[in-house]
Amino acid sequence: MPELPEVETTRRGIEPALVGRRTLDLLVRKRQLRWPIAPGVEAAVRGQIVRGVDRRAKYLLLRFDTGTAIVHLGMSGSLRLLPAQTPPRPHDHWDLRLETGMCLRYHDPRRFGSLHFTARDPREHPLLARLAAEPLSAEFDADALFAATRGRKVAIKSLLMNSRIVVGVGNIYASEALFRAGVHPALPGARVTRAQARALTGAIKQVLAAAIRTGGTTLRDYVDASGAPGHFRRKLAVYERTGKPCRRCGSPIARRTLGQRATYWCPACQRR
DNA sequence: CAACGGACCTGCCTGC
DNA sequence: TGCAGGCAGGTCCGTT
Image (cartoon, rainbow, N blue to C red; front, side, top):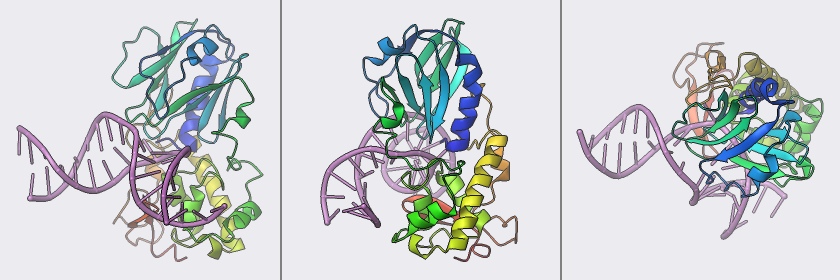
């Protein structure tokens, strides 16, 4: 599901309704997500004022005075703001109910998402501690990507999706960024040149920013906090466009599996 | 370490 | 119509 643009769109959508508001409680309908929701989370967030809604990589961080709730949407998760009395649909696994009468409702058919709570600095949480730089930060630049790819035999596309190298880039935007940079997805990391690293960092920043501007990409499940789909799908150059003409040169878009993930590229525009 | 395959789960689509 | 198989936006974990 959600890659960085979809998570950021969700963050922006839920923030105004949450910050400064007090929670009533957390209603858990299904604890078995990717990891079971720990039994203490309800008590930790009950009756607390939301101090901030942040994002780190694809994690959403709800800050309270008692600590931080860490939410991941997995492959099929979404968060919506709804009146608390709205009847739950299948796969609505938890509600964070607010004193305002609204609730933040977590929906996730595949249950690859998660909900954690930490009383400590969330940056020290095991899920977040070893993450690389944010792609839209100045810290992620050509030098950083070039250095991270040295000595790596795996395909550059797999490295772009590796959260120890850069976070937030998933299967859609990895293919899209490689197309924009004119780099072949199967190029081994070690063979990426400095110029290609520069093109790739630029392309990643560009494509993620452009996707955020249109509310992200909806393929199947993803909706934003108000239930609306994202519109970046229309702008996708290669993802799920097998056999269709390249928007730049007209050649048919190719597809293959790399690192067990579907990968799309233009064989004419991306020659290594 | 790096690389790789498997695991977690449901829904939807295709083809026999 | 039914059923098996494959596929889907993520990422952790165990094995080599």
